[in-house]
Each structure stands twice: as C-alpha cells, then as structure tokens.
Length: 255
Image 1 (spheres, one colour):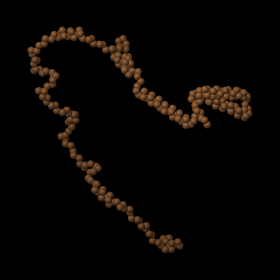
Image 2: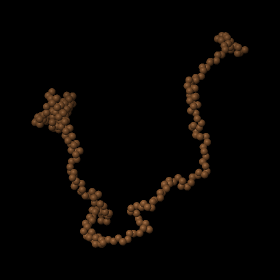
Image 3: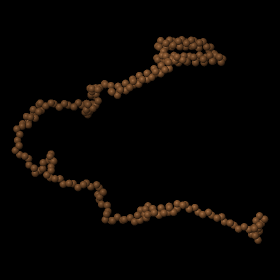
Image 4: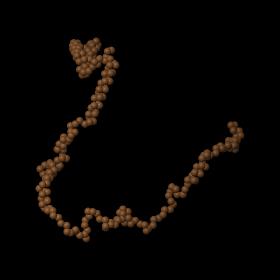
C-alpha cells in the first residue's frame, strides 16, 4: 500500500520505467594490429633472461696451481757454431802458442808516464772544513756567462719592440697634429703659459685678500653666499694653476 502511494502522486501520476544509460563502445587504437604483429615478430625465447640451462663445468677442469701466471716463450736452442766476436773462451779452447813481441812494455810505460801531460784536477769546493766536496762549475760561483759573445747585447726582440713603439709614437703624434690642424687649435708657448700662470696667481691673491676681509661672524644670507662664491673662485683658480703647471704642452681653440 505504501509503495503504491509512493509511486502514484500528484507530481508522478504514472509509474516510469527506469532507463539504463547506454555505454559508448570502448576505444580501440587503429595501430593495435600492427603493434601486436611487431611484438610477435620480435619475440624470441630467452632473449632478455639468458639461456634456460647453463652448461655445468666439468670437475676435471679445476683451477690448478700457477695456472694463471704468465709463461715465457720457449727458449730457442743457440747454434754452437755462431759465437759472438768478444765472447769468453771456452774451457776446451787452447791459446795460440809461439807468438813473441820485441816491445819492452816496462820502458814504454815509463816513457809514456814521463812525457805524458798530468791530469788536471777538477775544481771543487767544500762548505766547511770537514764537509763534502761539490763541483765548482755547477755551483754558480764561476762567471762563465760573462765570457759569452752575446753577453750584454740587447736581444733582437727587445730592439724590434722598441722600434715598433717608436714608430707607433710617431704615428700617434702625426695623427694628433693632423687632428689639431683640422680643429684649428693653437699651442701656447712657454712664455704665454708662464704669463698665464702668473696672472692666475695674482688673481688668486686678490680673491684670497678679499676672502680674508670677510667678517668673523657670518649671520646673514648675503654674507654666506659671498663666502661660498669666494671659496668656489679660489678652488677653481687653484685647479687651473695646477693644471697649467703640470702640463707643459697646452692647446687652445680659436672659438
């Protein structure tokens, strides 16, 4: 009774049959047959895991002593007929008999010792009275480099580099002179430069005298401005005098 009342109502006068949603067909790739065929063609037994059965080594092939040590090649038999020129004589060989010499070796050795030049002693030096001996040539105490033919001669690369520097300096000066000619700049002579420096120094003394005449107490704006102006003039004059005294060559424009 309750189910019928639940099925029939104002909102739902007639019972409805439940409709199940239809699922779309599952996606199948178009490359599935080709991939399947390729996998079957490339498949081989024991391709990645190795052989199923490994041959068991024979118990007769066990590791023997000194079997892994390197072996020298077999020694060839030497021919007994081919002996070296300066070989030790054999025990069965007999010396050649009957050879005599008229040379007096005692007299010859005495004459060679008397007439021969004595052997020069090698120069050595020791570090202390009972120290070890050292070669004097390798010690650096022998002045052997000053006796060379090219000692004290300027190397060729230094001479070549100095010539290149001089040539570059001349080219730079020529370029500067051409640039100055194009700019119509005038070079100050030494007399003009000195007179200009003297005039600036005189001007500095006048401004400094005026600066010294300022009152001790500066309490107004006009006094502060005047003091700052005089200080700027003094600094500028000092800078100009220093530049003129430092640089000997000065160019000025005609503008």
